[in-house]
Image 1 (cartoon, one colour):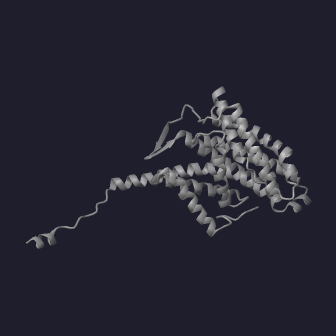
Image 2 (cartoon, rainbow, N blue to C red):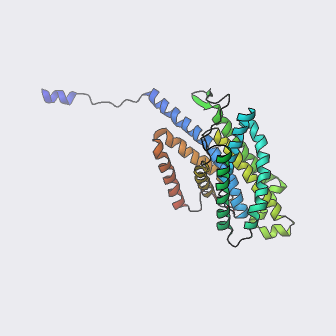
Image 3 (cartoon, one colour):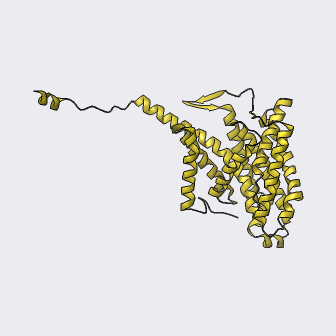
Length: 313
């Protein structure tokens, strides 16, 4: 009787809760959206770096330091004058653009005549990064900073998805910066001259293109885009004078994965890295996120050493 009873016992059933499945689906989609938003900022930080690397063969180690400088300038305008960082960027970007052109004329241009431009530029711009970091610490302080505006901590909802206003503004600024730079390079006469100068410099000179002037404009644009990326990043994370070291790692990853000089590829690579980070944070402890992110990127580069997209350098 005992054996018969055991045979007739119903097998345990695995039940799937529609509510639980829906919550997991919402979590995944929310993570994708958040990842794409931060990925757009990575992309913006990368496109200026990629532009200078592709156009002049200059690896600007100070690129992320200029981004932190832009974030600090926006922070000071907010604290001293109550100017929102979105509006403050309209003041900061021209300053960084012309400042970048001066840096190119005084420091970068002499290096472009060196026998090994890559190594010389890395050493020089590493020194620039240290100078910028210490100036920020001296004038401000080494304490972490964060933008505190009237909409900080507030969110709006689209269906079941929540969007923080500050993160949204940062992402919109990043998308706007990428689109503006892409249109400049593809549609304007100066942008086309810049692309021609890095693809065929000798032929560009024969057509009357002033390589020195074009390169100076490119460097100014790169510094301005870095500043805009730093302001956008300040909407998402806190920052301090040393933050540029972490940002520089992601900038290198985005550019190498997207292809040196490939603006569109760099932007897409930024979105992919942000997406990978967003999904990892949803399901893994924070300390494992970078392990998974960098592990997958290493695997991709082992399979495609030139990156996902062709280099235009």
